[in-house]
Length: 574
Ligand code: HC1
Ligand code: SF4
Image 1 (cartoon, helix red, strand yellow):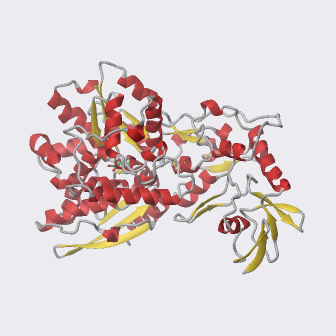
Image 2 (cartoon, protein in one colour):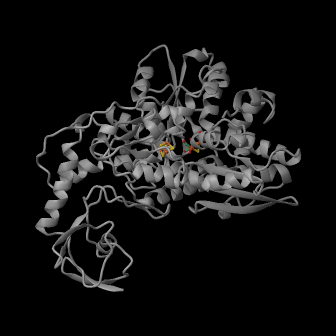
Image 3 (spheres, rainbow, N blue to C red):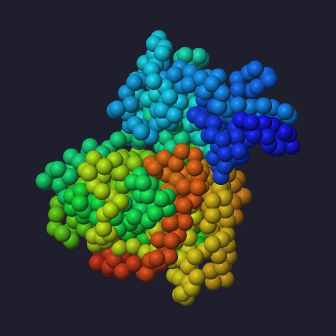
């Protein structure tokens, strides 16, 4: 331990910590910008490039960045001296001198950390007017917009993409004023091996990285009298969107969502949860089929499109391992344009399917050639939780005070098994609930498989089904996924089934969710809410969903049968 004094307060702290950590322990706020410390992920971005955390060391007459300066015996720190505050303000003013002045029209307006700091530090004018960066925006992809003009070189995205996701797409190029972050040789994002997981977007403090905005497309469809506009919401939306309307993280707003969508004028308000149940019918069948017929094991879940891209780019030799199931929202799109279209007697070409997703990669997934060529473009438009909340605000909907209502049928009924899709471990837990009962013919009494739950990056569990020990692996975050995939490639994997989600936490931590600004507690609260929603459901196993059973009886035939294959399964390409 060393003795330090911080703003006149004496304290003893371990000598290994930084001034910033010491200040946190003393409840003294030092503003930061490039710094990011995600404890659960063991991610620390320590570039010290912005100097917004500058503090003064008395006695040594120096200014230092708190985020990288370790404490030292006898250190006397002032975070609140005029000199320190002034240095911090100058750091922000300098960043602003080379930043577009377009806050009014910026996608991050009022969500931007640089803008918030300008306010906090009392910046009232931009004192320096010199050369500014001028780069074209990268609009090449269906998912992510990269605007280097707004990059402040904090390199949080780079740390996230390289260390946590191990994708290695983003890195700094050039020197000094000409330095930017982008894919190697600054090729367009669409030509890189980006998975569109959106975790770089989730940690970008400004609007240098944002999702492609598709809200206008939704408004256009809604105003077209010839279109029948169907909307679906993902499991993870209902536990997160409330945050954007001032509600506590972890508030469940399922009923309000259904009401809001009806008020906006959608012709049918469906639930991706319905299709998650459908996915389980197919995926559990596929698992059992592979076990009983000596098929490829382990089977990997396939509902996360960023993870699918990752395996296509990074492990092309393993493309026969993932389940062939389309992801739930794509399945819902197909069923809406076939079964539902027939039921209500409407030309499927008139149906527009809109998916509200916590995910940026879903935008790129919906545009994949093999998912757009049949069934009239499975899903037409994808908007993120953030985009959808913005639409509600544009429409003047008082979301917080809306009454509850139900989703429409036939594609609105769901079980607890489908809700847990929204968190890491949930898809495989849902699959086990069904596979267990199908394989044993017995009731699974305790449906909560706690051994599969949690936030550890890689987890495993064993479920006894008949005489077999079914070994299950779970990974979230692509770096963790990589480890499990390397084991499969090297013949060292002992699992029967693996669930992988690209985003830390699963969909609840998706790249399109409300920004949590480094507060991981928020993601944990969303996870708790997911499990609570499951507990509140009357039915908790996918194969008990009456509307799903009806769909097979009236239309699809057998799970994993010919028609189901045709409509609900896909293939992967390197
Ligand atoms: Fe997900 Fe899925 S769980 S992938 O995170 O399988 O996005 O919520 O909708 O499709 O159900 C996302 C969430 C979502 C699909 C389902
Ligand atoms: Fe990397 Fe994911 Fe961002 Fe692509 S979307 S650059 S893979 S972090």
